[in-house]
Image 1 (cartoon, rainbow, N blue to C red):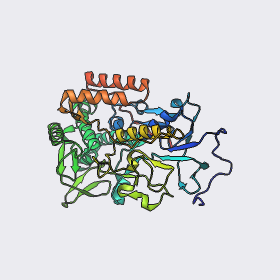
Image 2 (tube, rainbow, N blue to C red; image 1 turned 90 degrees about the vertical axis):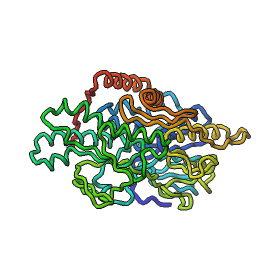
Image 3 (cartoon, rainbow, N blue to C red; image 1 turned 180 degrees about the horizontal axis):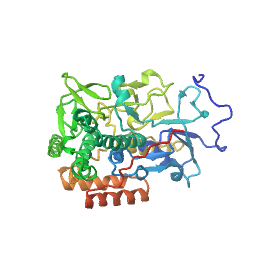
Image 4 (cartoon, rainbow, N blue to C red; image 1 turned 180 degrees about the vertical axis):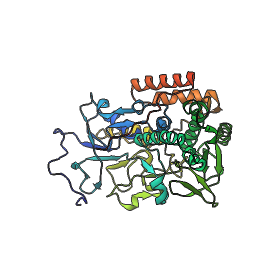
Amino acid sequence: MNPTYSVDPGIQLHFPDSPLPRIVIVGAGFGGLELATRLAKGPFQVVVIDKNNYHQFQPLFYQVAMSGLEPSSIVFPLRKMFQKKPNVHFRMTVVEEVDTAAQVIYTPLGTLSYDYLVLAVGVETNFFGNQHIAEKAIPMKSVSEALYLRNTLLNDFEKALSTVDAEARKGLLNMVVVGGGPTGVEVSGALAEMRKYILKKDYPELDIDEMEIILVEGSPRLLNGMSEKASKTAQGYLQNLGVKLRLETLVTDYDGEWVTINDGSRIRSKKVIWAAGITGNKLKGIPDNCITRGNRLVVNRYNQINGLENVFAIGDIAYMEEEAYPKGHPQVAQVAIQQGRNLAANLLRLGKSKPWKVFQYKDLGSLATVGRNRAVADLPGFRTTGAFAWFIWLFVHLYQLVGFKNRVFVFFNWVWNYLTYDQSLRLIIRPRNP
């Protein structure tokens, strides 16, 4: 296979000579990181490849976008994580193609052979083929996109102060959130609390009551992956905060100024936050018969990609059927972490004549927060809402953050915000274009 892009001849992927079999892990999300950490002391040379040099904690992207947290609080440098793990090597690049027959991957830094390949490449935003929406809407699948949203929000508030025309000002102030899953619900709740507690103090000359927050969801209810009770409670919380819900409604187009709805109506807004769907990141060289709906890779109960004995997939990109999940597992962090843990245990059994263990997902529950003292929790054995669910949400997310310093910073940020009803991070930081 010849790569379809050029590689600088002066660049070469090079690693220390090692007699150990090489495991290449593509992606340092929840699953890839769990796998690499557990294999670090094993009889392997582990190579981790990611387009960023940090691990990012996706569940808190929306808090960065809403000025609640600094981005540095929810990311952790990969090189720092692997400092005392001499068998683990990191390279910041992307995998363009895979040659499964030759057991080689192609990257802009050159080629790299592998003995075992693990794809943990995750997913990207799904715009369902609508190019206008893809160009104009704002997704939230990375820290940089969350920062872009933060800058856009604050910029538009500043512009609204000097906008005389009421309709144009309405477009600057209005927010449309598309998608009623956890991300859409949490973003809408955070926007509503910002409107209630922050913006009236920051922009006393603006009539903040002009600002509308509209949450659009195509199904009859919010939080489809959670219980009916959680859905109704979250809906009540959002309505009490003044969020306008448009259920059983689809966004069909967006031109940067007007949002078009499937009933023909239009909403004026300069910002559409898109949280309506995800699709797997495609990787050239993977056979088409290994790919199913949502661009997910079909794997067996050992996370082996169908027909590819030494190529595995874990996390959101992996599609695995088991008795309790005949349509595949939910694309959440816990699945990725548990799959990474199980695959690590199996790989460590190589050469020991020990049978591999099939993966079985243990559902630890689902959580979603709408704001201060407003959250819903579906946990094994019980369900709860309100302040207790909110404190559970806080504890779980603090525990899952990578790095003690990050946990401390996020904890003190949350305490300060809780006591003062304020954040101090409403900064417009523009990248400099030389």
